[in-house]
Length: 481
Image (cartoon, rainbow, N blue to C red; front, side, top):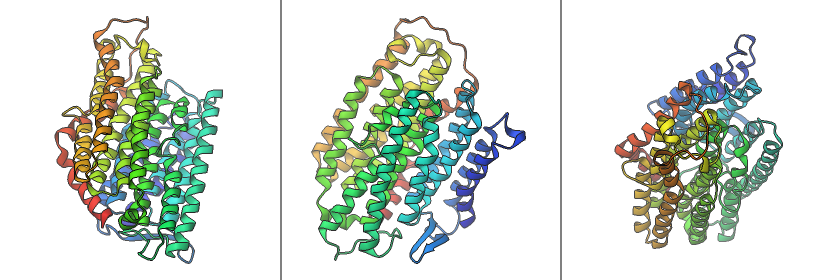
């Protein structure tokens, strides 16, 4: 298991540096793609390898403060989702960036280093390791946000850096409080806070965690950086919104809520109603704002903010049924949202169109792209048999088990709003005539097969929930101890 962890953490670093080798300068995507494939294989092998749950310590900085990794149920879920999606995402990025050949070596270096940061977050065995890689993720994704080097991109990068560093500073403070209270930073089933920990300290720690990790998880009102980051190239948008950054925020909340604070302390804090209200406001308000966006990527960005609310809602609840639904959505949203951003990038590359009002009739010119967009859109609404239905079904069941009728109302309202801002795009693309004169230049296969693959996976996971449910259920049981 230790060798597999080394591969997952170190190989992307080597791949990122290899893009500068003289023989690879004309093909800088090759090392990142090979790295992504190796990491995906290594993470997949972790599930069947020995040593599941054992800690691998790499470096002891001080007594009780070490760089350490561990593969458990939650770690593997996030690592496998990220590593699995990184392969088609890297292939897609290669084809996309071929149309935007600006500093490709720099782009692919940081794109690949982001994989190391993501794996480090997923596989961290203690709060200290999680914090280090959480900070690293900010610094290796910031050059991607400002990659185009326009004034808009630089403003977006500045906002991203300010928000992320401020959030990380609060996470650091939460780590200090954890150390002072529990005397250890090692993650443990059931959490680190014992019965002797005062409610005041528990509430202080929960508040810090919500603010610190809530930045990358885009909990309102900490979400503003996310739509602004749409100035980045579309492969980066997909990376930010479906694979790495936002999921890192959600995973940070999941890990610290259940392996630091613990379910019993969460219940003692009495914050569940207020936190559920915060997640519910994020879900509904972001959907309303999405309705007003004509720019395709910005509408998808606000959709991300809303959908992340489904995930944080279950995490905040402390209820196993709602947590199960949120972790189902953690995976399903990643598949659906990366499909939507792939489609947006292909549309922009092929036609130059960036606004929804100009997309009428585009489905007849780009049937594969808009077909995949339609599949992912239906999943976001919760239409059978797409995987998004499974997420919402389990969330509904969890809300009933938790006796939270207000959550059911929020989920129904969100589904309706999703339909309002996704279905008109699909209907206009296939059933209206062209309003704007544009010509499709023709897409390379690298801008089609990744989105067809991820759309197909949305259907597969929707038709066969047994592929995901048993493992997610095990994850919930392990977290709830």
